[in-house]
Structures are given as structure tokens and as C-alpha cells.
Amino acid sequence: MVDEVASSNIARRRLERRAAVGRRSDERWASILSAATTVFRELGYEKATLEDIANEVGINRATLYYYVGTKEELLVALLAEPIETVRTRLEEDAAADMPGPQKLAAALTGYVKTLDEHPELFIFLSENVHTVMTGPEADALRANADRYGVVLTQVIRDGAAAGEFRRDVDPQVAVLAILGMFNWMHRWYRPGGRRSLIEIGDEIVRLSLSALEPQAA
Image (cartoon, rainbow, N blue to C red; front, side, top):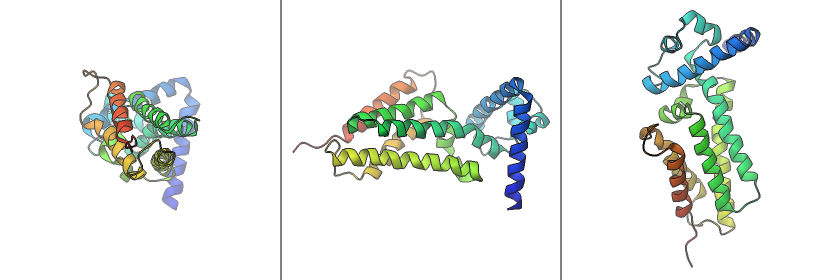
């Protein structure tokens, strides 16, 4: 309990310092997040250090500690917004008044769009890093990720009940298989390659919809 309070106080004071300094600090914080994305992807989260990130930004460790206390705290800050964006976009698509296949296509396209906008998500996907994160902010991050799977499963379940998707496949298995295709892209997708991430995502969306088409009577 004492450790949790201390951690909370450190995070609060750090936020207050960033807010007090103003725009210049905001720009520095953005450069720190950008550097963390680069370093975590190049070295891997486990091997990367705060010193590596400070060097990437061009500052010393003391300056970096003014903004963030641990590598884990930086990871949570890096992932919180994009993972929440993934969830909120899905919930908006799931609540829309449209047929199941169109709803699923919109949801999956939105997922790819967020991956394209926030390449730091590939860090989360590639190293199972959620297992090393602790504290309330990390719990919220995991809850957002879990919520995504629950909502997407319900989209497929509702579509199957309406006769829009095949009924001989467990919706949860279908979601795991579909997300497996998307989330494995971190192993082979290369920015600047022959196909963009959006183009590849569109192909996977079509594959997913085709696999779930109801079988002819």
C-alpha cells in the first residue's frame, strides 16, 4: 500500500511539473514518447533502458527522470491513448445501425487505422508486455484491451444469430483467429514496403468476412 501511494505521488508530481512548464515541456514529452517508440521497437522492451531513450532524445538521464520515473511508467503512458482509441472506435462501430458484415468490416478497418496511426501498438503486440505492467493505469490499459475482444465477439455472435455469419464457428474462436492475423503483422510488415498497412489490412478484412459467410443450404 505504501509503495502504491508513493508511486501515485511521484506520477502526480511529474504531471504537475509537465503542466507547469507549458508548451516547451509538452514538446519535450512528445519527443520522449517518440524516442521510446523507436527504442522499444529496435531493442525490444526488455533490453531497452531509460538511458537508451534519453540518448535517442538527446538529453541526459536526469532530465528524463524529471518527466518519467521508470521504463514501465513510460510504456503505460505510450500505450494508454492508442489502446483506448482502439476500444472507443470499436464500440462506436458496434453500436451503429448496420448489418453484421458491414459492422465487422468497419470495426476491423478501424483497428488497422489505429495501428497505422499509432505504430507504438506493435510494441504491445510483439512482446506481451502487458504482463510486466502494474498499477491502476496499467489495469485500465489491460481492461481496454480485454473490452475490445468482448465487444468484437458480441458483434460476430449477433451477426450469427441474425443469419449474417455462419453459426458453426464459436464467435470467440473467430475473434481470436481474426485478431491473430492482424496482430501477427508485427513479425513481417515493413513500413515503406510494397503494400501499405492499410492495404494489407483491407485484405485481411476481406479474408475474415469470407471465412464467416453463412454456408449455402
